[in-house]
Structures are given as structure tokens and as C-alpha cells.
Length: 273
Length: 281
Image (cartoon, rainbow over all chains, first blue to last red; front, side, top):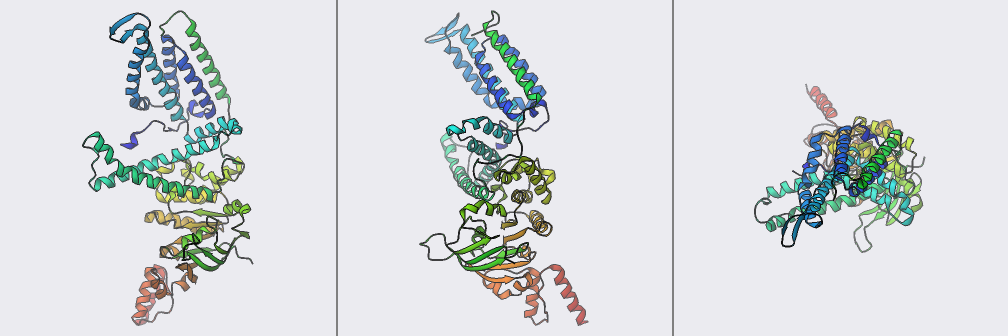
């Protein structure tokens, strides 16, 4: 059951999206997020959706995986949409009850927020993390933030923590399952009773899990020291990040498309909030 | 010739207040290129001894020298650790990166080796432990024996002169144990790497050139496997077993059968028994 977590996993491949420099991907993802929240034209969102579908197609991520990645956030999308409908009260009033008022602009905003969250997940959580190896992604984070080191920003440490966290997720998931089975074998009951009772039943899982995690941390630290780990100073990397033509092409296309989409904010057609 | 490793009057305890020494007055030298097994039951001090080899622990009294470096010399700490690679019991807790080759690259990256040379070292280390085909695999998909070989490759990439293994097979199944022992033997024979292996499996200890037996912080027996395992009574008195063929010969000898030499392996045992039965015809 715990192995169903797909969000944030990497699926190796050789598509052009896989081959992009991870730093470029990080930059493009950032541009994408900003533009996503700047545009306010339904036609622009539809165009963006089509383009995202094209990128998913190029990246060879199976459609099933995209839908699987979206499933866990479905409830969040619905709730956000509903809240936003009541947030904007300008425009033509369609329905009113006490202090609640639904207007055309409110409905538009609700739809836009739902679209934004769905696109955000597809663009960042799915396209970015499914096509980039976690190591490359952490390398990129370290690389992009290293200029801020002189202001005391711990770029290397953060990247190293991400690497270790990613490395230990499957190990700890496996361990959790073992502990659950061991406790079940001793008669523990996780499936019946009130929420409070079920929450209490988790304690005998969490305690051994944390004890073992601390023990692992201790052993890993010694093993890292034995392999001459001394922080980020003077460290080299086996894989040197390099930008190539495909990266420049991707940057140019993204910037042009985004500029076009943003410019639609100032045009007279489409629906907007 | 100066020995590669020398313990000089080494004594150790974890804190001043503790009355009991964990290691007491150890004098031991280990030659370059040898394969030494350190035996002892739990709490005999064998792991503590191993941890002195790359300055995870420092002597309370006495000195430890490795390749001419005093382990107390902080300035040479990383020289020392690069020379002496350490492999621990649980492979899961030594692997840093998810992808196999990224993990093997961890140590040379720390040492500031140029990228092209890291690539060479990683390829060589994976080849040496026969794991080349798994270089892009995720470590959590591998078996215990494979993970432990990756951990060995991870220290091998530092190009160490010596590898210390602290019960490297204790958490493995028989198949994984066999793989790891084969790898260790090959590294000793083909690459000339000095091996110090802590173990409590007798059939692993007999593969070494030399066996050191520890009890209560002292070295009680030291010699080649034939010599050490001829002291059956002494080994039993400190809670250790002897290999099964040795035990059988020992019992036969006790029952009055005339057997001269110590045997360690099944083959030797079969040969001795065969000759014995031939002689009785």
C-alpha cells in the first residue's frame, strides 16, 4: 500500500525532455510557475493545456502515470475551486444566500485556480520529477544556489540532505511495512475503531521506526566519514552539468510561448477573471 | 621491512571513569598485502580494534601506525582514511546515493578527484566487484550480497591499500555471503589489497592467511589458520567454535584415533578419513 506513492519518482528514459540540463529544467519550471499565475485568460489556459499535453507526449510519460499522479490532489483542487468562487464577488450576481454570493467572475476565478493547480502538478511534479534523476535534480539545486553560498546559504548541505532523503525513502518504507506486519502478528489492530483509536495504534509503529532511523543516521554518518566526506569544500563531481543546443532551443521556445500567453492578458477576447 | 599496520601497546576504554579496558595492551603488526581474519565472540573488542585502523576511535594509551601515519595525527586524517577503507555490517546504512554508480563515485568526489578520473575509478571498482552491469540500477532493487559488494566498490574507488571489513556477511543470506567472500579474496589476490576482516564465521576465517583470536580485549591466539585451529580447547573455552571438519578430527583424536595434522576444509577432512580407512584395511 505504501509503495503506491508515485509522486516525486523518477522514470528513466531517453526523450529530449530527459536529456535537458537539469538546471535548465529547473529554470523553465520556475518561469512556467510564474506565468501560470500571471495569465488570466481562459483561451491562454486552453493553449497552455494543449502545449503541456504535447510536452507530456514528447517526454514519453505514459498517460496512466499522469492521471495516477493527479489523483491524490483531486480533493484539494475541488476545495480550492469552491473557496475561490466565493472569494471574488464582483461581476454579475448569479446566486445569493446570506453573505455567500456567486458571481460570474467568482466562477471564473474558481475555474482558473483549479486549472492552475492541475497544471502546476503536471508541469512540476510530473514532467520535472518524472524525467529527471533525483541526483541530477539535487546537483542542479546545488549548482543554481551556489552563488548564494557567500551569503551563508548552505547550498551543498541542502543538496546532500535531499540526496540522502531520496535514498532512504524506499528503505524506510520497507521498514515501516515490516514493523506494521510485526505489530499485526502481535495482535495490533490498525483498521477498526475511531480515528483517535487508530491514531493511537500508530504509536507502536512510529517509535521503532524513529529509533531505527536515528541508528541508521548514526551509522551512515560514520560510513560517510570513512569515505572522506568533509562537506562541500573542494568536492568534485563525476557528472559535470553541461548545457547543449537542445537546452537553448527549449529556453527560446518556452520564453516565446510564455510571452505570447502573457500578452493575451491585454487582448480584448477570451474570458477572464 | 616496516609492517603496514602496527599496534603498539594499544589500550582503549570509552571513558575515563570506566574501570574495564575494552582493549588492553595490544601489540600486533600486519604486513602489506596480507589477509587477516579477526575472530572473537561479542564484546571481545574485535570491532573496537578495527575502528582504530582509520581513526574512528583513537587509542587511550599506546599508538596505532598505518603505512607510517600515526592515527592521532589530525592533519593526516583524510590521508589515512583514503588508505584504509572501511566496510560495515549493514550495507543499507553505508550507501549514500540511490543510483549505484553515483554511490561508488561518492568517495572520489569527496577527495576532489577530477571528473574523468572519477569515471575511470568507478568503472574499475564496479568491475572489481563484478557489478558493472548494475551500474545504473537503484540500490534498493539489489540483493543484500549485491548491496554489500557496492559498499565494497564504494571504498575501493578511493584506491585504498587496505580494506577493513567489520562482519561484512553477518546480515546476508548464504548466497550473498559466498559472493562477498569471493570478492574479498579476489581483491586480496588480484589487487594486492591488505584485508582485515572481523568475523565470527569459522568457515570465513579459514580463508585468511592469518587468524587473530581476541577475548576480553586481549589477543589470545595469532597464527595461520592451521596453527590457530589446532587449539580447539582454548577456542572453546572463550566461547568460539572451530570449523566442523576440525571438530570431527578433534573428536576422533580424543577417541584415540591416530591423526596428526589439523584439517580445516571438507576436502582435507575427506582425504584424511580416506587415508585412515585405507590404512586399516
